[in-house]
Amino acid sequence: PHVIYLSRHGQSEYNVLGKLGGNPPLSPAGQEYARRPAQPLQLSRWHATRAAALSLSLPDAASVGSRSGSPRVYRNLDEIFAGEYEGMTYEEIKKIAPSEATLRSMDKIGYRYPRGESYFDILARLDPLVHELESYHEPLLLVSHQAVLRLLYSYLMGKPRHQAPKVEIPLHTVIRITYDGWNPPYEERFVLG
Ligand code: G3H
Image (tube, rainbow, N blue to C red):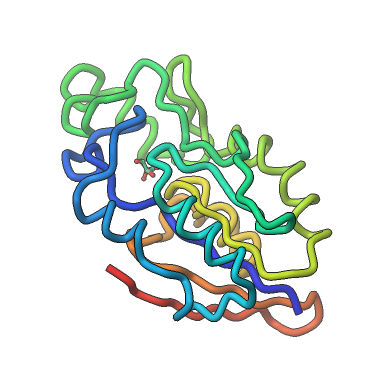
């Protein structure tokens, strides 16, 4: 079977403030998460451990395959781009553009931020990456962001796409998904925070 580990990057300063996007540094708790060794996750190889340590410390984390022994950065795994609302909180968006907030709540998967992205846009950029991932035959750790991981998680677990934007992907938790294409996929969670 295939084994894929999913994790959000360590908590960032923006996560603490509830702000969208940007490229903020990790908070102290996020830095601690990034330093956690991956052995408890039973990643089979030393280099995967190293990949985990490195990638969890990337604040704009968009990584990782351990195939060649070192992490790789994939821009396809970047967080949803909030366009004109980058760096704002949900409350600030509601204040300056209440109708936009309403539109998003009515169609979260289809809503595109002004000059930014929608969940459908993320799906489009994930498509080539998913094909690549499925050709790997060793455990992979993907470190990314909540919006992107919601879509990957839902795809790998066979959950309905339209519900994906509301799936909770907690910080400081590694999700291990095992699937073989025949039996139902299953997940285990390792809370490291
Ligand atoms: O910080 C942004 C989140 O990862 C995406 O959350 O799509 O629920 O606004 P949202």
